[in-house]
Image (cartoon, rainbow over all chains, first blue to last red; front, side, top):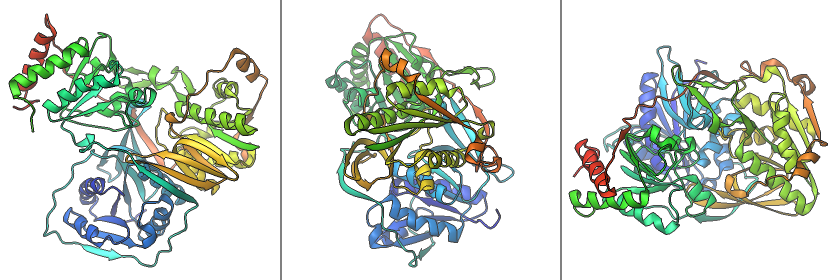
Length: 327
Length: 264
């Protein structure tokens, strides 16, 4: 296994890639090796230079017109020969849906292991990488070690800090030109963007969560008002998004994982799939009519009461102390 | 006539899982099992297509033999035949090893136009088996499907990603992983449940697929589990009480500000 050297980081999302570079640098220094960022795309030289500023020791670039848009098959056809030739010991891939598929298929082609959605990555005294992830719907955390290299892990957005950008950082940009990009077997015929909140919910310092206790979609206004006063955002549970079709995104195991400074769960019972997505919040306030709601087990502050009464009152109380709105 | 195979996992029913709070170990021994949620959506989609276009739906699982009971549900929903791949040597397999076993089973069962999987399983939630199986079988894969339509020898799939929805086309054979949004799995009728008992359940051991122990189980896995522990929950659990909603709200606001959680 000793032939494998270096830590690699890749994500098609540049914000997530910055975070991977930050974590990758830390792991590389513990493993006494270097961090290489991988850039796939077309006309991406400027982006490559930017990554040096965020802390990459080296950037490997595959610049090809066929890589202009992300397609898992073309990107895979670039990553496979790169991984075979340069043999990294550890490869961090951003845990978007695209990234997870990419990682699984890369691992399959190279007959490797892959640990997806790592919430912790650590090098132990023996120099082994310990990869931790949530399993059993949030009931447990599993610690895994690899027997193959490159060790492929995927890392979700917002798990690790984005490093500071420094203009003076030095690093090497290597252009790889001898890779044959494959023609994909699946064809993307249409892409419809879904409207995204202006700031991503992962970045919000305060998140107000809404669950089944909300009776009508319009009532989410109550939560939005509270979020606005606290300069935060509103997130919902999967049943509101999927069963009632009120929203397109949700907070929870299969949706967004968040760790705000403050999470206010309103009318949320606290099924483990949801809890898995909010577990790392610094402080959790739970408001629920049902005194037996499991969310209370997870809460720092417990309010047994109707969200329709408590939330507007909380907004009014906070308005009074904070002044209307907060930047 | 469409030939469809659905890969299902008999998963731990995570909503009923108990934890030994002293040791933080999970009590897995008598934890109830069921078809993983998204796999039920996969069965529903397959049966729906069969009802529309005609054809056959088979299901396969790599599981202990007790999966027979669980798989009856897929048969009751309308699948025609079930395969259980079961052998003690499969224990502690990771996704690399399990996808190998599954691929060998699929090759022996036959050829298919579509292979459906759930987007992930409810217990391990790795979302790896579908893409890995497709790679092993050398067929295109479309993940996170919300809508599937067939025309001639091609499928058109709408997939839900974080920032967009993508419409993707591919020629069959193809492997598709489905999300919960794709459909509402049916509740089988009493008759359908009774009929399911007449349907064939084939059980194969590792030897039936010429699988030897070095490619599966712990030896055949690339990832090894060191431990599985319930996360530590250290929450304050301070109950805020009051006569009126306003009083509760004011107390809560004051506490959050005093603790520096909300800053003025």
